[in-house]
Image 1 (cartoon, rainbow, N blue to C red):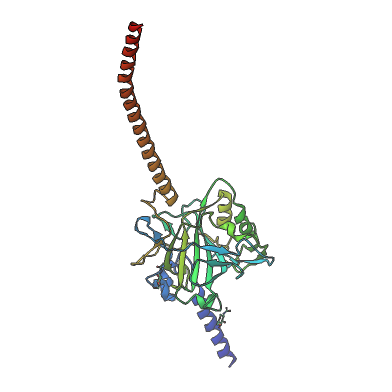
Image 2 (image 1 turned 135 degrees about the vertical axis):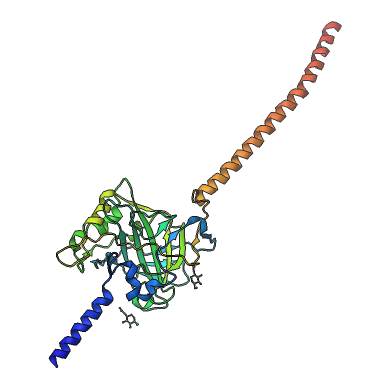
Length: 339
Ligand SMILES: *[C@@H]1O[C@H](CO)[C@@H](O)[C@H](O)[C@H]1NC(C)=O
Ligand SMILES: *[C@@H]1O[C@H](CO)[C@@H](O)[C@H](O)[C@H]1NC(C)=O
């Protein structure tokens, strides 16, 4: 009897482990996810490569407004190395406006590459990846009790995707996470971090974004995510990126394996539409630049018109004045002779 109980326990552990074990490369890598997690082989998967010349401008897309992001509260936040990423839990006092229902925040996490290699973001823009990507995960709290319930329903989740690239200066907002990585170097380690202004992790311009229906980018790859990927990027320093690439391990104990290149390759679009909240001509001009160009051309034309008008008036005046002066001179001449 004890033997059977032990055997059952062993099989159960084995099965549970098989269900949970996945990696980015190797025999459990992303090409094999769909064998264990069928939805990973679905036709509306994320991430995608956003091709700006095939997006659809949608002027009806409402502005997206993060609420409570800049009021961090007083409760510390959980920071967790789950072996696949570093994840920060977020309280439901953070939520999004600009959707038909209320989406409250649950967690944020990062995807990155490897020191010395290009790439690291999951989404791409015209075939180009950036160094890393931030995902802020929200669920529809009007319709569902919690994240796990919403994660399996169409449009149950809203995820914000933020492209991260390397810039000249240190980004202090990201230090609220990066400063604590050394406390959670191994898989399953957790720590608490002081609350901070999460809005500062986002780009300054939230008006320009792409929107499409997709999935979780990790198993079980549920196709329940309404994605918002911002056009404007945020910048962190080279040192900050290297801290992300070199501090965490994907394993619990030695031999330690660095947690790197935790990004999924772009998935086929399969007739899905990608909408944009802004107009972009050949990916060269933003709406602001287009507006600037338009105003510039208008002002230019106006100046030209004014110039032509004044020159024409001057010429006409000259023509009118010349005969008059002739008359005047002759009149004066006459007056002189008469005197
Ligand atoms: C989520 O909500 C469902 C339905 O109320 C419940 O059965 C489940 O235990 C909850 N899960 C978590 C992780 O709280
Ligand atoms: C996502 O899918 C739903 C249901 O099919 C559809 O109503 C909605 O317009 C889609 N949204 C986008 C951004 O494609």
